[in-house]
Image (tube, rainbow, N blue to C red; front, side, top):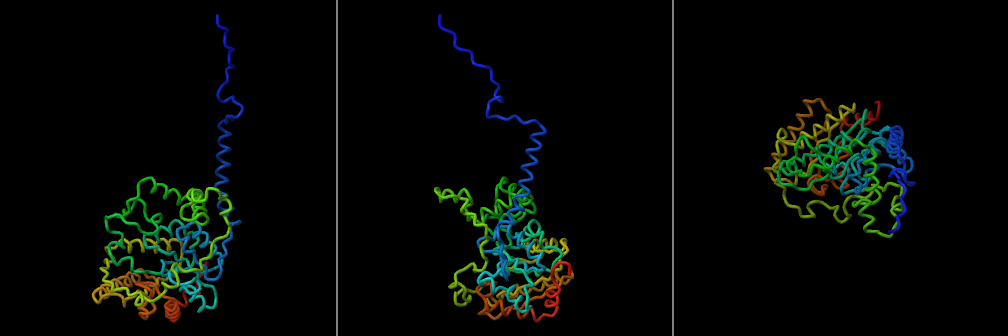
Length: 377
């Protein structure tokens, strides 16, 4: 007869030495601790990561989609009592360093840092509406100069009306479900993730860390490219400067020197334009936050347009001014700058921003608005 095998003791799986069984109350405590850490972490991060917003600071070009940083910058500017210049790459200053932008030139004329550059390179009205609604709590009870660039209504493609998919700037800011954007073909899961991230600060903070410290590929992509380096050393705890323009100095020349041909834009009628409806969604969002608003329309490079396109643009410009007038919003319609002061269809060069600022400062209503701007004014 074969000898009997020794009997193994009966051990419940959860009685093993490396296992811990939590009861209901213990799970609740654990969840509360995790939730507290997730809430406190983004707040604590602001105390250790330096945001040195020097004179005429703007969000760096490489961090244009770092919306957590945008929200932080806006809160800081409001706490300093500044008014805001809000707009696309024209307001941001695509071709010029940060001390030659429109806000910088206006601050020089005002003799003080009155205006914070809250422009975002590459943004368009559909994205701007999402930025203001979800990431601009700091822009409240303040004076806001809102730049209106009709370039985004110059074609059905710019107006996001075409059905063929194409990549456009800042897709995480546009409406994910309603209203529908025909050319936006993102699958359901990324859309849901985008919506959730808008309401969970720790997710926004995590995106900030990846964008600001690990480049476009994030932590996972960085570790693939640098398999033997410590990722913790990448976190410099200092936000890069926004001084540099988005282009090389050799590109900051007039559109004529670049030999850009005439532009025969079709110009979508404002009452049929998706981007125009989103511009007004931005206006409404700013007004709901108790801001005082001044809209600056243009100056667009009309010298670059064909005769027929210039006439159609004039009609759009007049229609936009009528919208502002009917809503009772303070505004100014800027005539075009001299032709050689433009780099392209809508971006001024450094001398163009200086001239634009002088013209705005000569407008008594605008000058009074800027002098009285700031929280609680």
